[in-house]
Structure formats: C-alpha cells, structure tokens
Length: 407
Image (cartoon, rainbow, N blue to C red; front, top):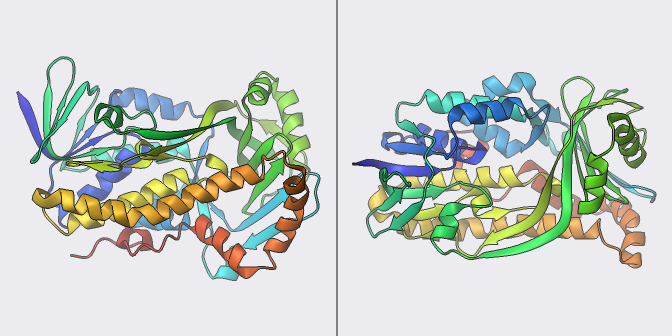
C-alpha cells in the first residue's frame, strides 16, 4: 500500500527540518501535504543532540532573519550569542583585520546558537505542523523518478509516492547515488576538531579567526565567557591532538591562540571529522532536487555550510510558492540557475581561504600577514568578507530579509 504526498523531504537533520518548516509555513505551499523521512528514529536524533556537549552552530545574519520569519527565533534567542566583531590574525606574523558590525549599521554579523538547542527547536516545530508527517525510521532502498511523480521504497516494501522529492540526506546522500548523479570531490587531508573552552576574560561578542602553524583556528563567542572552537588540522595532527589529556590539549590550544582572552580555564570533550569539498554534478533531476550537503559540502573555515543551505531553502520555497507542482521541473531548472552564482562564489571563498592559510609556499606564507594588515585599508576587499559573513547573496527571497513569503 503506497502513501501519497505532495512533497517528500528525505533527511531529518538541520537542513531537512528547516526546509519542512519553511514549506509548511509559506502561504501557498502551506496547503501541500509534506512527509519528512529519516532513517533514524526521532528518539535517536534527540539523544544524539543531547550528546553534542557544547557544540554550536554559526548563523549568518540573513539566517537569523529567516529563522525569525519562520517563528523559531523566540525559542533560540535566549541561548544565542551575537557576533558583533571579527578579529582575523596569523600566528607569528604581523598584521590583523578587525571588523565591527556597528561600522556596517547591522545588529551583528551573525549569531552562535548551541547545536542541541537548535535541533530540539526545529524538531518541536516540525511536530507542531499539521501538514507535515514524520516517517522515521524509514531507510530508502530504491527510488524511481517519473514524469509526474517519484516513488520511494524501503526493504520491507513500504512505498511512498510524491510529486516532488527534495534530498537533504547529507554528504553521503543515498538519493544522489541512486539517481546516478556524479560528484566532484576534493579531499583536504584535514580534520576539524570541535569543542568549547571557558576563557578567563570576556569575549565581548568577538569571533576570532586565527591562522596557526597547524591550521586555521576559530573561537566563536558563546554564553558567559565560553567560546566554541573549531580547529582545522592535518589529519595526523588532529589524531594526535584528540589523544591528549584535557590539560595538554588546553595548553596546545592556548599556545596556538595566544592570550587575547587570558588563560583558558577549562576545555570540553572534543570531536573530530574529516574535511572535504564535495560538489554534485547536478542539483536537479526529474522531480528531484538536492539541497544542503547532498548538493555541496564545504570546508568549514568560514562557517558557510548551513548558511548556504538556508539560502537554498529560501529560494526554493519562494519558487515553489509561485506555482503548483505539476510544472515543477521548470521551476527546479530556474532554481538551479538562480542558486549557481552564490554557490560557486561561496565554494571559491572557502576553498581559496583554506589554501591561503594552509599553504607551504614561502612567498605566500610571508605575505599573509601583510595581506591581513592591508585588508582593512582596501574597502572593496573588506566588503567581500563582510558580505560573506552576513550571508548576503544578492537574493531577493523574502525569508532572508525576515519576512514571510508574499502571496
């Protein structure tokens, strides 16, 4: 017996849940019957969120505005920390760039939100929506896309029919693989170590990007005197760092970052994951669209991955709101064309930034500090970094400016 839906979203993580909420909340698409599918039971997702131990998500200002428009921000702002200043420096070299949100007449460059709180808020909102059905655990084992619908199957034979399928099932997307969509892949031979650290001095809502000898290190302001950190290391170095005791790792982190925030008081449990750039050869196929990490996975050096996905969602929902789903393939082609410039620009930005601050070329290494010192004196270059951090993409999507979609 098949279950019929207008839209099937495969992947119940941050991107898939945000997408389901945006679809269900928009004016025309609120009449759509939506199913949110994930291979894990919801209870397992909730438990995983609770085990994240202080990890945080960096949201660009445009992403915050979108969450506000969707009615989510009231539940998030109590634990959100504004990023009002950005300090960029290179360990052992002259030069730094200091950016201040007041100079750009914005409330902040973005916000840091605890990952567990964001996950729980999204899940609670999904559960409150009358036109969204959860189907989990449901492990998709086969897919067929036809001219008028898509068929999903799992091993026990249960079938889902949908007019449109949106794949938000991550970097290892089963949907992408099952449809034969190729992938361009670049392994960075790096791993990211993430966790949080309690500092002696107040961070004053400043985000720090520090380019160290072992790789870029970001400290992002959290509640109190705590900062979330993400430290990109060569794979072997990351493994060695993870093996250190809390005290030894804290000392290593202090040595790399310096004493701008005084002495580090304590450090949380650390996690690591490998880094790669993945780019799908296609983002749309007949009645199917890939979104988030299923379409592209970025280096986390500038915290752009989720913010880019939220911009994908804002554009896609706006286009779907303008038309019924019977002519959806034309809309998907328009969507892919509209999103291409922002996606390409963001990929170039993160990839080149990582190359610049991990290069072994002596001339580039020596010129990095001068480049940072000069950045503040060249407004057009500084403006590019600010726009990237704000999440400005040239999009006119209503959600990105904090408004619901107009009829």
